[in-house]
Image (tube, rainbow, N blue to C red; front, side, top):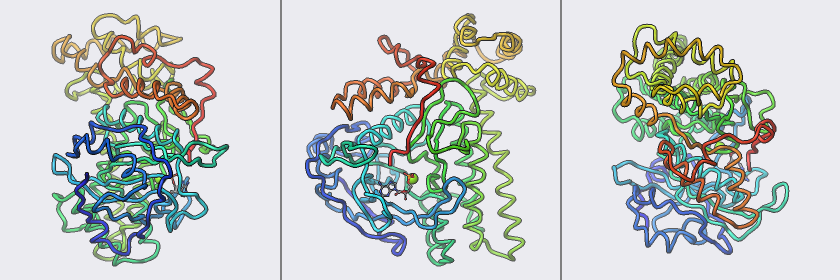
Length: 485
Ligand code: AMP
Ligand code: MG
């Protein structure tokens, strides 16, 4: 079914532990991503027949070399020196139809040498959550890991109560994290750190200048993550647990735990039940990413050539570039959302003022941007209706209109806005409804309907009205997400 070529297992001995998945007693295929299978060049008929066994750990695919990767991480600002794949195994690497190398990993497949006190398992609900939110992100054009399948194991897992167990088969550009570098840096294992650096550059950034390899990687990851976070901010996505072990070297979004899309726009929005201080609130995400990159910089410092003080200054200069990289990416993101095709003098103020209007009015994030296109077509009604107090918005609109008139033809402009401002995002109440039906009633209907809506987020379709609107205020004010571990 799969043609593996396992460079991590082959080239990075000492950076992982070999381990075997627990065989699932009664594997049952719950969700299969045929779109992704096609991208990976996998025969769909064969995959459908074999997925329950091969993607649950019931049977190992030919050529798989299951390993648990070592990593550390800063969790909520504090160092955890030993994390690693405690409930996941990398089966191996595949080359997709575009020639890109992709990891195939099982998540929830049992204990590994990195499991610490955990059971190594996963519950069905959180794995379906990762599936649907990852697909939504992909359809939004945001770099992300993706689910190839979810297989129910037939074995319950103990959480707050007993829940159906499942394994997620995850595909990623790689599973290298900031925390992977931290693991070897804090152990002062510079030989392995150096091999990791070379591997990461070869795999993700083969074209960058390598005069200073450590600084080259830091710069590349900085720019990839600045762009990624700008995309999150644009769609109102809150990752929820931006620990350094959940920040990839590739620039893909990874580890959909307590993540959520924000309804009403408010920078302080937090959904995660464990984020008491709001460290990972919507509005903090760019600053937190900068902090996470500083942990990568510290880890790479021993590999920066030259005197210590000089190395620190150079790494600091790369980090200082994050603010500008993010600002550029954010202006591009927000500019496109507002219908501007190119950046002009004065646009910075227009964008900033719009964010002030949003922060004061707290309207529904997704619908506000969507209805801007309606306003660009001449009807301000739906947009104004999202605001309790319209004063600030009314004051902003004429300047935006005047600016738009310099930029392309009206209908083309509105269509371009519809192509970047989604109508359907995985709203929390719809996600909860889908997961509850799947795990409590074995009903995959709502999950399938949600997946279909968010897989074409920009195209308005009849019958999907329920996916386009916010939940009741009562739901929104008390909504909490859990890590699901
Ligand atoms: P996460 O919060 O999912 O990013 O996980 C943080 C760390 O906890 C990682 O090292 C995971 O492998 C580990 N972990 C999470 N859940 C479990 C579990 N049920 N059993 C073992 N390890 C786990
Ligand atoms: Mg994680």
